[in-house]
Length: 305
Image (cartoon, rainbow, N blue to C red; front, side):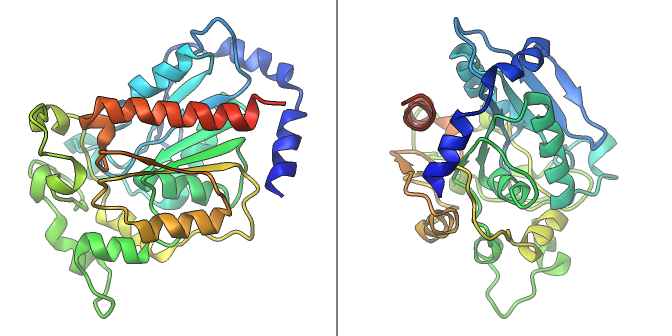
């Protein structure tokens, strides 16, 4: 099935996207659904029909992925980073926004409309869960999941919150996460925070927590509950899928990765050595390895034959 899907994608009239590609410019667009898409048009000598859309995870901002998006823009892809609504920590926005998985999926839909039908979704952490929920209703050219939440994130969220199976997963049980930890300055709705040492490899001599914190945010506890109660459901994913996990990730465990691989029926899995959950912020070498892994997989599946 996966092979026939690839063949179908290669038969598309790639030139039909020329008009859309030509209209892309380096800018940011805020959607009616409150998501914000930053566009990085191709800077390469050749122009690929495949666009790359980068989502962000639960605890980092979309800006964390800009350098990676710009790298693939230089390789000939139109790229974009999507900043989800409801993660903003400022007084003016976070107090009144109610974010749901359905709403985030709609933001992805608006962004993929902008980038075209041959969009590759590249999604870390919580963004990976949103990308998988997106596939319940729509399709993309390919999917790259990086340290992603699994399709059923109940066990993962219980581990993060320190709640056993006998305890309720609700606002009351999660209230201890509001205004705490590394996000002590947060205002507005209660947030699901997490310890610094679980996000980063803090052992390195070059690690700068103050610099990293500028790129951090957190999902509301209400969104975490929505994820908990709404696992991903679809019969079979025909989308080519690459699964990437960090060797030193202290949030996503091997059992989560195994669930993702089985769910998407993919054999394409890569481990990034000496990388933390948020290696995109603390490990430039791991970020280079990520780019290489995506390039090799993409070239093998879409640029051969």
